[in-house]
Length: 273
DNA sequence: ACAGGATCCTGGGGGC
DNA sequence: TGCCCCCAGGATCCTG
Image 1 (cartoon, rainbow, N blue to C red):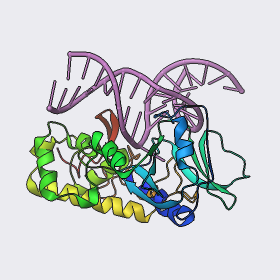
Image 2: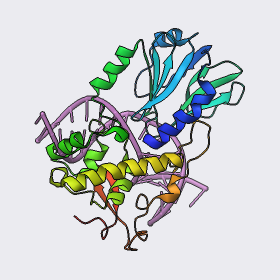
Image 3: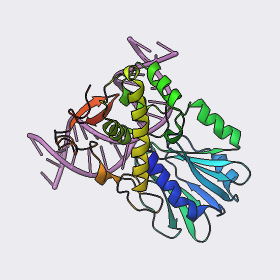
Image 4: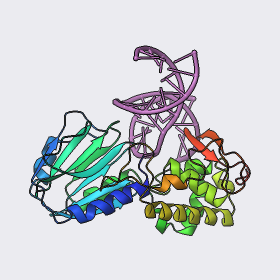
């Protein structure tokens, strides 16, 4: 679920609450997440202070004292929120990190597609991102790099936008919304985009993501920000989740097709093949 | 090497 | 009300 704007919102809202706090204890549930939690990690983290909270693609990174870090991925249904320690546990709470002052950071994930991992130093963290070939941040996309990646692909542009090795952070919602913003049909072959079209798409992605961050992301089902509040960008969707409804630009009914294994929404009039 | 599909999970909604 | 099927914001592994 959570794509870049949602993850950015979680980080921004957690930052003022937990940066500077000391990790007093860590409790991890029995059910495994996408990545298995190593028994040694709890002891490594305990006693360290959270120095900073940041985002890389859809990953949440907590930098801890001593150059190590704790990294979360929210998967489809993950939540990361701070609660009073005595507050009742919501179902599917898998990790509890006591940050003193009677509060704890809780990782909750119904579907368990999310993950949490510890990295002993900055090199190990960077290696992990490099191993998965995590691409650049969409706001820092080099225009030439972008055009080259599009030109080199034999896939449709929707698939390329979802490819985290090309650009990090875009998911199904923002791929569809960006393609509408750019006026490009999602099934167009990436290699056949002209220079102007490639530039338009790059800027559309940036514009859509920035606006979504302003609205604190999109809440369709599970997502809440770090403060537990829902986002508001879902009220501004122009194509995503609106099949059959009128295009806000030309009033033609929005269509839904399947591309790259994901449901894909577009306006058949504004986004020509 | 690359692209597409299956897979890991649970819960909610629609149809019957 | 209940059951069954489909669907879901993602990443990774396997196959052709």
